[in-house]
Amino acid sequence: EKSNPVAINGLGYMHMYGMGVAQSYTEAMKLFSQAAEQGNQEARFNLGAMYITGLGVTKDYAKAIYYFTLAANRGHMLALYNLAMMHLNGFGTPRSCTNALQFLKSVAERGS
Image 1 (cartoon, rainbow, N blue to C red):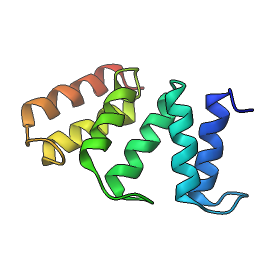
Image 2 (cartoon, rainbow, N blue to C red):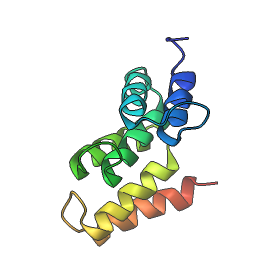
Image 3 (cartoon, one colour):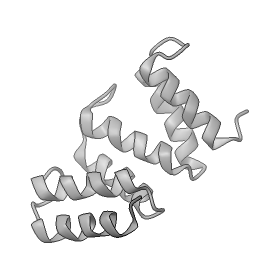
């Protein structure tokens, strides 16, 4: 169903890895974008992951930070961790151990 962002994200994941469907980064990106527009945090994280790694897209740290930030602001712990690592290593942002530490502290305080 086109109005279920969890299902749309799941279908995107299936396309990203070729799980029961033809593997297609293009289709995964389309589906993740659709689910992210509907507020799905996992889809926002998945878009960030595609941009940071360059899976099916040109590697773009600024877009990765954008999508990880959207997801992290809504409580996605792995997105918050990835933001910490990006700040620690200076990927798409000036290197900042202070910011990385703040993000990692948030992960430790909120993580499970």
